[in-house]
Image (cartoon, rainbow, N blue to C red; front, side):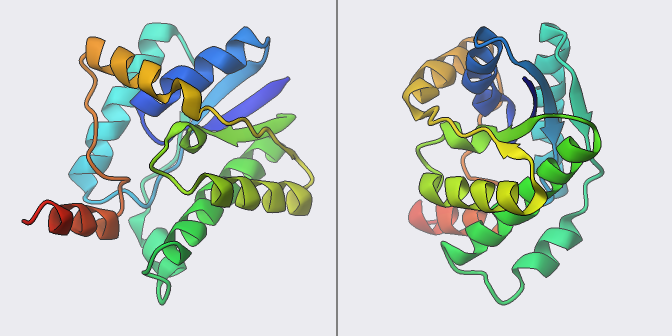
Length: 179
């Protein structure tokens, strides 16, 4: 099956890509993350994803960085989990729409590997978009491979971010750390 895989970062790409390829899928990465803040963080994450994909000779499609569309989308919904739902919708809608336009049979997301994300919310959003856009959402719970991927990312010297990406999660992380 041809799968367009929304890719949030390189460490989270490791395990889902291995699994999807081992199952015989033809996978293309899709980097669309307007939620990431600041721009330097976005560039840092993108650079690592591009380097990893180049090393693997893995095709990656990168969209233009448009943080304003994220901010407009979540305006009035800045609290958790509401902002996360709007963020997932934004990124997965674009992924699914692109997948459909480009002739893929399915779409998925590397967000499903992280135990720090709202997993069931991601699944719900993906399935709703799948129904609405009439393209399969390939759901798999990749959280069991999170530690393995985290260890591999450390071995490879990958940059590992300390927050999900948005300005709100960055602030929450700093508050939690007492900064």
